[in-house]
Length: 496
Image 1 (spheres, one colour):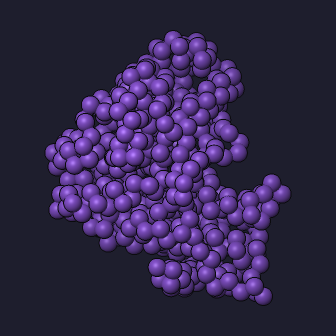
Image 2 (image 1 turned 45 degrees about the vertical axis):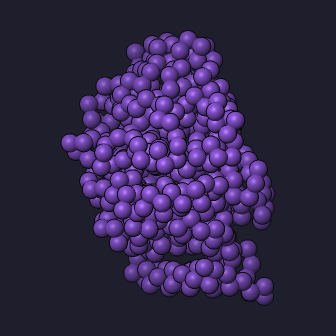
């Protein structure tokens, strides 16, 4: 009988499920839904919300798809792992009913609350203890609900992150993880526990927080009710959960100090691992607990995030052609122009406030536009070069923190499918780029395999991970892309 592992990746654009054969490490079936991006509601400027029931709907549909594609038989499914969009706030009552739409990662409404907390708690507490400003993270979003929706707040039984909510729907149990609490800026790294000082400052009762379980552990089992809905066996254990960026790093086997992972989906990220609790004094990049962290052998994840990445590319697609043009066609058009897009620069900060800009509402801007010289080819190239430039801006912050940024791993997906994007990324940042045949849902499945004990360690779990290709900087292109970045920084300074 096969031993199958099921991994979920709950993004803000789609939900993906993958069935992995634990013994071969090969994908049995995979499905991502919806085929068009999930809607993000913006009731007011700079707000971003999603209905958690929408995520559950697509969990149901993707599970049906992969179990049918994989011809899953009773007894074959051994464990479930969950990856999820970070920083979202889900509020439920005593019956587990959602009280409001989730305030998701790119929502900016709590910026001022977090900034005020940073000032009043003081950086001498926030940086060594929280490794971050409270900023626009989950704790600050909960404080916003408390201040602006007091009647709803009074009904809250527990708060959760998006992956915790899906785990609750599967198991009926409300739990979270140490890495999850750290991403919400609830965790005191010096005290090794929930920050009582932050909770007291925000007037948040600790009873609202879920029980903490290790990232790799038995975190509950599928109920009969959920099993009937999903078409799987009751009793299957949930044995892994992590936010999307720690999980993306895990899915690329990035677990040791000096290793780096990157993504370019809706947002663009670079995630580095350190044994030391390092932090940026201006909190422009953020430090969380990594999935393999322990007190005896600590691991911290340093996250650089650019909100306006794939979402910018999809916006341009809708603007210039919609369904009449494909992403490969866009990449081909962009490649028909020279490096630098004939002086056109794109500032990509149009999806909420950006942490690397210290949560300032910079916005998206096209700079240097000449109506007689520029066409859609230049715009398409400027968009991709602008995204890479913003990542380079964050790279430099991470270098100043002492992180080693020489080799970066990525899944061959999203914007890394673009040869132009890969070329710009490698040459502007002067790094080697390794592409792998993996994604977040595969990583979640492998994590479940470790959590349930099928794999003894990460080395065994990643034995089947295939490296597809390696890209190195080219001397003649490094100089050209260095010039592009200088042009982009000059444009950014004008905007600022």
